[in-house]
Length: 187
Image 1 (tube, rainbow, N blue to C red):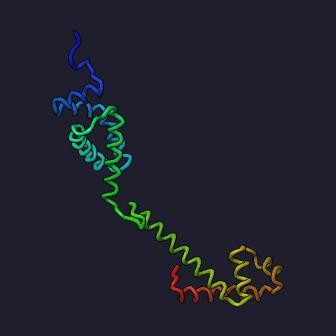
Image 2: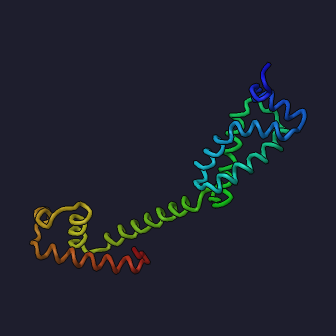
């Protein structure tokens, strides 16, 4: 005769037994079978042992209530989804931001987006300031900085002597700096 401990009822039988009796020991046994997977998932998402341990306990409490309300056919898959959703909700709760489309984003995502917009705005201002330079300054600055040409290559393309090229680049840089300051670009 086999001992009771040797018999391992399937997940479905344990779920049915829990639904019929409400016995917490039954759901505890079932949860313990997958607890290491739940903890690993929580640790992956939450990146903190204490938070992951807290999440495991919260998930255990949640499934005890939820299993009385819903019909679950594949416990392991269902538990994975419940655990994943719990972790995602924790992350959103701890770092919520709603974008203009009504979707949740993290503060880091918003910061990167704002930084990108500011950089694009600064580049637009720089382009405008370059266009405001005198013709020879604009030509030398574009060739030297944007096209990464050497003084000699700028000389060959413009026909200007090296001293004039250096002077136009230096004056162009100074004029760009003043123009950007007028446009409140502080980078």
